[in-house]
Image (cartoon, rainbow, N blue to C red; front, side, top):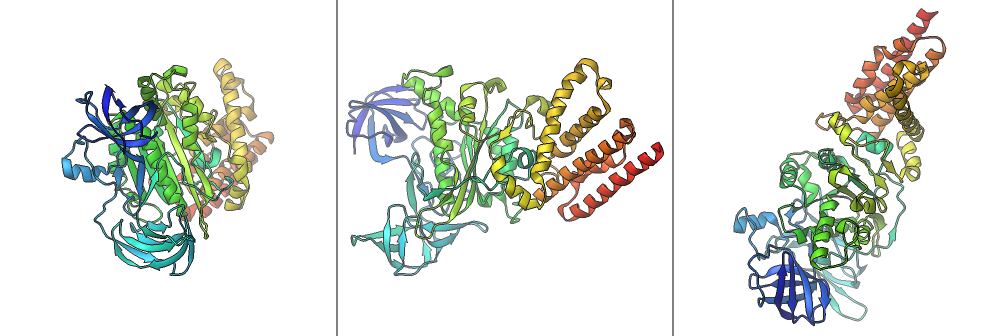
Length: 588
C-alpha cells in the first residue's frame, strides 16, 4: 500500500509525491479527512489524482494513501430503488448520518452490510458451476428477483449451498476448483467500473425496444441492446423524453444517471418515479429503478465516474438475463468534466478544448451496450440499451461531443426547438433524425402486427419528405399554386404530424401506444389518403375532401383505449368510405 504527501492542489486535481508503488486508476484517500480520489496520471514518483470531493482547505504536506484497488462498485441485493451519488455512495444513508448536506470524507458502504436477505438456492450440491451461472435468487422488490451469480473467474464443483437469511458478506455457498481450492461465495460481488463485464457472445440487433412513443417506434426505432442519442437545445424536451422512455420502454430494469444536469431535474425524477405506477406490474416505478444523482453542483470529477458506475450496475443486471435500459442525462456534462480535468493535467487540447481522447472515451462507454449471451455453463440472453442525452451549447450539433456521439450511436433523435415552441411533443424532427436498425427489425415489426408495418412507415416518411419540399413552394407563391394532389398530400402530412406524431405524455391513454394501435393509426391515415386520391381523380374537389367530417374521428382515434381499437378502426374505415361515396354521388 503506497503512501505519499500532497505536493500541489488545483481544484479537483491533487498531485502527490512519494507514490512510486501506486498503480494507474488506484483509489486513494487524500489528507486526514480521507477524501476519496483516483489516480489518473503517474510521472516517476508523482501521481495526479482526481478527487471526487470538494478539495478546499487541502494543502501541501498532507498525507495520501493508496488502497491498492481500482474504483469498484458493490453489486448485490439492495441496488434496486437506491439513490447513489457519482461514486456509489448511498445518499439516503448519508443524509440520515450527516443531514441534508454531503459531508466530506464520509465513509458509508454502498449497500447495507447489516440487512438480512432471504436466499433461495436453485442448484444442488455436487453440480458443476462456472462464472456467470445462477445459483439462487433473492426477492429484492415485489417485481425484481435478484439472481445470485457465481463471480467471474471461479469454476468448479459446488460442495455446499444453504438457503436462509444472510447478510451480504456471509457465505452462502462454497465452490471447489479443479486445483482443490475452496472459494466462498457471498451475495456481494465487486467489479471495477472501467472494465466491461465479460459475456459469451454479442447478438445482432434484430428485436426492437418498444417504447410506446409513436415517433420512435414507427419512424426511428431503437433495438434491444442498441445505442441512441438525444441531442437538443435547452427546453426542447430531452429530459422529458428520457423520463417517458424510463417509464414506458420494454425494459425490466432502468438505470437513470443524472450526470451534471440541474438539481431540480433530478428532484423531479425523485418525486415522480415513486408515485408513477409501472404499467406492467402496477407497482411503483422505483421498484425496478436505480438512480445515480451527480448534479451540476456536485464535485466535477465524480461526473466522470458516475457514467461508469451506472453502466457497470446495468451490466450486472444484464448478466442475470434482464433487459436493461440506461439513461444518461447528459453526456455533454460528462465531457465537460473530462475537459476540465484534461486542462488541469496540462494535456494538449483538441477541438474546442476537449481532450484528444474524447471520441475514444465516448466509444468505450457506448460499446458496453448490447444484446448478449451471458457467461456460464447455463447461459441466458440479456440486453443493455443505452440512451444518452447530449446538450450542445446553443443547440449546435456541429460541436465535438455531438459529432463524436453521432459517429458511435445507431439512432439519432434530433430534438427541434421550433417544434417545441409550437408545442409539438415529442419534439423529434422527422427530417433530421434517423435509425440504422430499421431494416434489421422490419421483419419483426411486420410479424408483430401481422401486417405491412414497414410499408406504412416508408409511405409516412415519403409523405413527410414531400411536405418539406412543397412547403418551400408554398412559402414562395402560396398554397393556391399547388396542384390538387399536392394540396391533398400537404393535408395528409399535417394529419400525420398532428394526429400521429404528436403525443400527449400527460394523457392517460395517449401517453403510451401499443404497436397494434400504432399500426391501425397508420392504416387509418393512409386509407383516407388512398380513398381521397381516388375520389380526386373522379372529380371530387380537394376542398370538399379536406373538409370531411370523418377527419375529426381520425384525429380522435389516438384517445381510443386498446380494447376498443379494432371496433373503432372498422367503424372509422367504413365512415371514410361512406362519406367519400356520398361526395362522389353528389358530383355525379
